Length: 587
Ligand code: ADP
Ligand code: MG
Image 1 (cartoon, protein in one colour):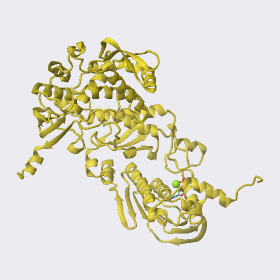
Image 2 (cartoon, rainbow, N blue to C red):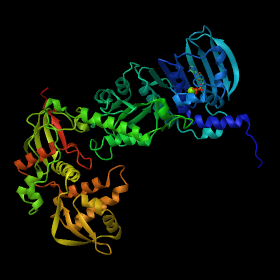
Image 3 (cartoon, rainbow, N blue to C red):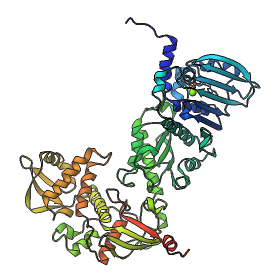
Image 4 (tube, rainbow, N blue to C red):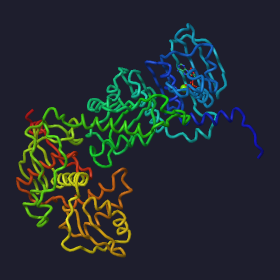
């Protein structure tokens, strides 16, 4: 085929395809225009997931009469004049493409009145062609109706999903903008039913309450923005969920850059990273973060839909975000030190000497020492816990008084608010895990040489893994050498498992190493450590006496994340006095 220039019509449909992917794109573009027009209230009404009808009304500045037709020309915009302006974009729009694109693939009615004018205009377009133009009376602001999206591009229409799916995409966009612009009152209706109503109070917390429910609205932590010594130009604000709120996926992490929602895996990762050790493995927090940086430091002109941005210094943005979230958690998610309720953690507890000496691992004395942490805080306030506790965040646990053991598996204890049950295995796993990792960071690993080096026959794949990661294993206390074939020579093991069968310990380690590329973001070392601790922790069915249980609880109090085991199971659950009273019909 010879080369030809595409007809205007085909070219504009191709261009429109980049901006308008689905009904939600229409909603997004119209909302952006309303925000740029300084609206204080934006109403969105939708039918059939937007496929049939999208209607967006704002009370913004409106379009002057003599500019209304111009607004529908491609690359016609009031937000940009020179290429230099691209360096300092402060509006959401600037490409002058949305109205032209949407109009070319739908039947559109655009009514508007500029705030300084007495008469408004109505423009009706079909497939981009103006059908009607007349004057109308209407309040200042703009109303846009988009009907029969893609009526003239059947191929596109075919790719639209169910009403429900399209509706969900619309919900997401309206929610995002409601969050990013708390001072604007957003209303969203689907077929006459209200789906979202943000108060427009200017308080992010109010919007979060409207979107995620009042409980989250109340519990979310305000991001600590002033990082001391930070000369970064990146400002971070927002609300993040307490560690007690977590979800299986990342959809509750929302990031905005200069008022624009962005999809940036590295920024999402910065948030997740900051929660490291605050959440059970594999779980994700709720976070709404608003990044502000000088417009010249971010390029928003990467993609027609503008969901991607590019930073001049991406690392600095990553660090600023991660630091702010981390600091918020450290400062606000635990009991403030100033109250003197819980002794601050001072480094990691060292290994008790007898454990290093080895010997009878089942021996009561050693178990006691192994379980032991330091003195408990004298007094404390009951906070924290897992989802089920419904309590407000807090990474520490209150002082607990041991009452006894249940089924040789659970420790029954009393806390300031009622009864607490601890899973002895999960709790001990947590204690060992943190001790092992802290120890590795601060001094040498607690390693114990075997009286006689052991030859362990592994599978070929396992042997490869173990040999390939011998440095990592050494940091945890393993001393392993290749011995030819798939046999390895084990000279030393982490002390806590030194009395176990070397082949079983090595198999555990190999298994952890192999699972390394599955879970996202868990360092290999932690995976191996987790496995070692699982083996070393006291088991269900093991009878413990009072001092042993006390020691375990004291040690758990020293942990950074005492509420979950390294695998993410809870270490404790509680029954409050109030619940008890209710059960007994006292209240
Ligand atoms: P862009 O937003 O990139 O400028 P659009 O095609 O979305 O391009 O809009 C073109 C122009 O129409 C805008 O620059 C603005 O001047 C005007 N406009 C569009 N929607 C509105 C609105 N809701 N209120 C006021 N002006 C609007
Ligand atoms: Mg626009």
